[in-house]
Image (cartoon, rainbow, N blue to C red; front, side, top):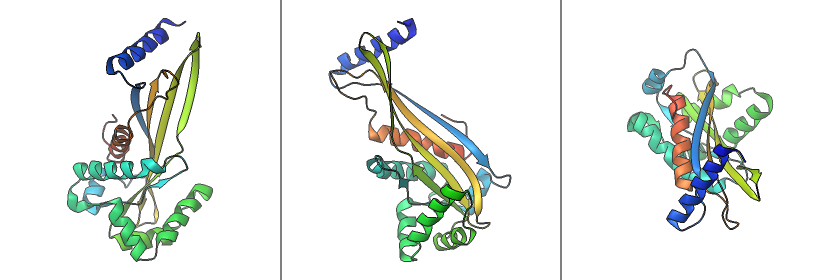
Length: 219
């Protein structure tokens, strides 16, 4: 067995023994910016404001959506000022009152299928929420991998990813795209699954994504 892998296993088991409960694991968060328009910058966000749009999620992460949304509200407001941020609950109420919920969902679906953003719909939504920049986040399905090591021992990795886009409502176009992923790695003990707490994963993932949006150093 690889010495480094064996050391990781021993540390994981020791941590479980110390806390006297289910399996713990090592949690890491990574992030990446895949696109950024030349005209987009943190100063633009501070000047024009930001609306966090209703969080979208695939099957299996519905229970993660609200904790993530609450954490990214807090992260955005700590990065910007309260006056410049519209929370996801506020934007959800606004687009619901304006009859734009289906337009919002269809704009996301259409972009995923065609890579073409509905300019008119984005401009209508931006006008309704009163902000030029709209942060749209989709939570991907949870991922789980097991790596067999030796003698019936395996290392399990569970992860969740947040895919973010910033819509520029003035242009009806994409200003920024990126992703943040939080993974917890550990050794299942007595058949129990390795889990990071939902709150911890939500906090880490939202902070990493928001730091990328703001052009700050990643976690």
